[in-house]
Image (cartoon, rainbow, N blue to C red; front, side, top):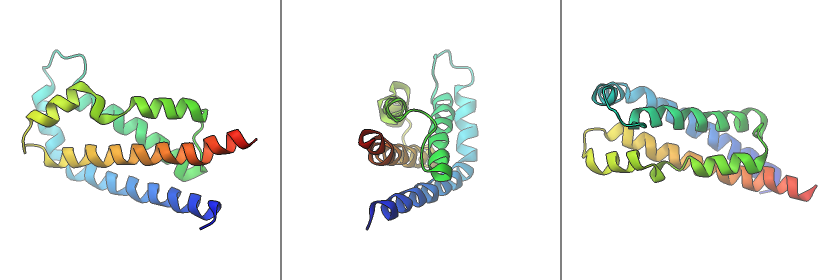
Length: 137
């Protein structure tokens, strides 16, 4: 597969995964509501619910830009650094919740797993196509 074909394939794959993530998001509506009810009185600075909202917004944004334009509007190195910071399973409140929530939130757990997978694919795409293009100029 030529580089251009591979890039188009990867962009399409990210679009497909984003659509799947959107389907997961709809399916977990009840779990989200339950999580929000559980955490709304929390005095923690960051809750799992707030992190879920924030992470999905950022990652959706990057994927949407790549799917639409083939690149992110941010400078590649900035986007890469930010995506590294968004590592879902490095966020303490999520890791603690993931371990301690048992089987109460299976759909949210699936969502987090797919979201992190998409984050990694997005990182790889930017490194492979945007950063490479920058270094070749």
